[in-house]
Length: 496
Image (tube, rainbow, N blue to C red; front, side, top):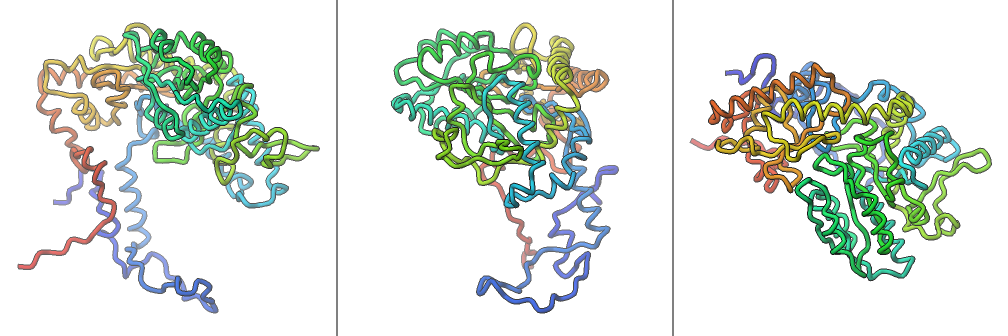
């Protein structure tokens, strides 16, 4: 048996299909090479298997077919904003002046790159209504760390280090409480109401003389806009604290409102979500952080400044603008390719186009909600924002669980939505279609889910076997995460 399925070939690991004595290219032995590594130099075989050129192409093409991608179909992961990445952005990122830049080359030779960083910084401050920005964070989680470090620095500057308590809603991303705890803050959880919003009364009861700030995602991870956000920010500032906003869901409101107008003090922006730079494969990410007037003097170095017609990186803490900075966050300035892609996206959309991004994202999510509300169980009543949250109530009285339903989606050609998150909803299924999906694409997805729900009632046992069409069947995800096998070892046949 070949183990192939139609046009999808079974493909083994490189070490299993290749040979250490084989190579796809022949190179002459180098001449006149001096050993500059001393005892660290080794000329032993590294044991890396080789392939011929056609074998190499086939190997990686076959592996690529095992991955789901936004180029293959709708990617419904909630809270991830898996939107189409325009190829124009890729073309711009590959311009030599951007793609071949080196972080250690003289500043005088990369003026165009610094000008682009300054330009995207201006756009992001305008879109958010904030006073300052740092482009250095490499991802959203590091952006959270950056924003909270600025808040901690502000408290130290005000000689209020006794303020140790950070409030976090129970529906928050796990990185929020983790970031606060990592910086030495004490985390307190704020309850959600039955409507999926922050319980304002519980928030008020948790404010005392040790209150340092609150971390809020808005729209939140239930796909709802926090209607008390202005009241929360006013009470936060009146109590001497700071309001950090997780910008993971900025795609729902970009061009529609400015977070700074809501009283937010710091917010990271996921360029790889809102502004369509590729993600989902482990990186690279980019998480610039914007700051209010209250925190602009505490953001990290360096700053990009135009001085006498030329751009420069200001990073000396003796500089008046940086005298209260907490210092450098990263060795280098950021992800240049991500900056270029995001800037290309913003320039091609314009202010009206970015506003339509948010409008269409919310429209698509609500179209899914209305179309599926009689089949799946919406977690909350009323309209949602950019994503729709379902509970597992529609699976009650069956032996099918959320995980089983998600696995069955794979056999239907779809990557599952985000499941079991946020934790405030039992058996959660979180769907985010983004604005780049057409009505035809959404309708096909809707009919697929309807068909699965109908099958639950008549053939629930098959869900326990799913997926059946994948190269590898159902895994024990818990054991795979806790005891991963990261090194291939050749199996030695047992002696007869």
